[in-house]
Length: 492
Image (cartoon, rainbow, N blue to C red; front, side, top):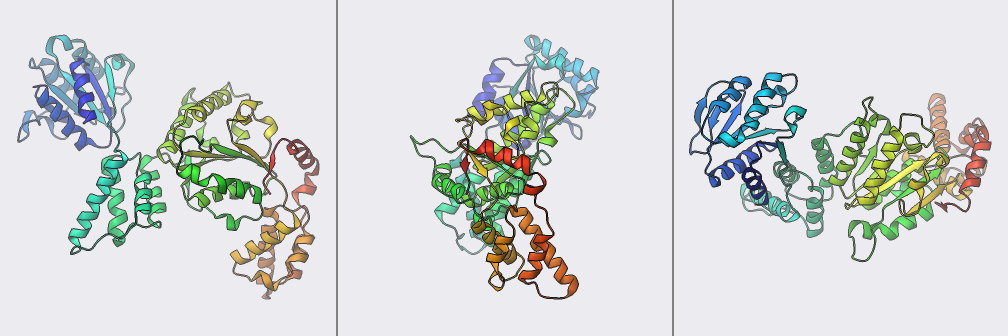
């Protein structure tokens, strides 16, 4: 039990205040009681509902009935017998409570006299600077793959026992995937999610994994800065991008099952015109590889307090590591990391934090960054080694435009073979995928209003009414194409 050894070492090292942040209070208390018994010290627990109780005996014994935090600390300070005192959920009584902070400091400073060990146990703790130097932090270890597999099998046995010996239906590949997706969770959370997957229908299948990942993301609590994308398209829903699809297919197995001597794929930068399908491609990468997709919202990262923005980024990247294997989508990355931004150095600090993580990450997190203007990005981000490749997503060719029309018609329950796709593809030269989709949407609205069936002529008229971005902003598109030539790989 490495956690028990770590706790004993901290107690033997005479750390006055031990900070444990965890949602697993029962597990932490069991560990502390065991350490107290081995150290031959009584273990007391204070809570705002129960006061101070001794808990290392067969039955809990009331020690001091006060539920007031300052009275409890005064009692601990005056107690001459060395003991371990656990303060549960004490975090509300640290901020703006100078008396409590002072009492904690006095107990810590007199540690050599009474040898008390105080343990602050809560889901989150912000330690005041007055007592920070007396504190040592301890994190409870997360379950290993072997422990998670044992946990899942235990839950399967419980289900089997409750259902007259029936076996849980699964296969080794899906079971291994389930265990991989439970990584980063506490024992209790992992057990609860595994139980939900099994007890739902007595089977562990691929269909359980997306819901499990969604629940895992919500448990980790970074919603707002990171978003969990549920609609991860397949590349069948993406017209063109043949070169990108082939590149990703070659690397799929190395990402999911890393092999010694072969570097795992790191990520790609998708550069191109707006509406060209970069965002859809980012979603399709996760769909193709069968892993969760996280989208990092740079605008939600920013905080007016110095250092908080970078902290938000580090926490987001840490969550991506926890949810690995996954795809992390950095949308319109130039808006956050532009070298021209005058924001008191926040962009540079964000860049530094991102580059450090990219260089040091060990977990399988595949970056997909999208950008409309690479010229404002810092060179240290786009150089070889940071990203595996830079792909340029250009306007679709005639063949791809035909394919895009067919995709969007089928998506809306219309048979594309009933229309002249060749004529439609020829009519919209210079259109992006998004503009083609909008022509289909507008055509369907018009036909619904006129109570007629959609035909080729309706779509041709909608196309004729549209001025594509390639015309409206032709100069900028020409500059972008000129820059990309020879510097990027064609996604098509």
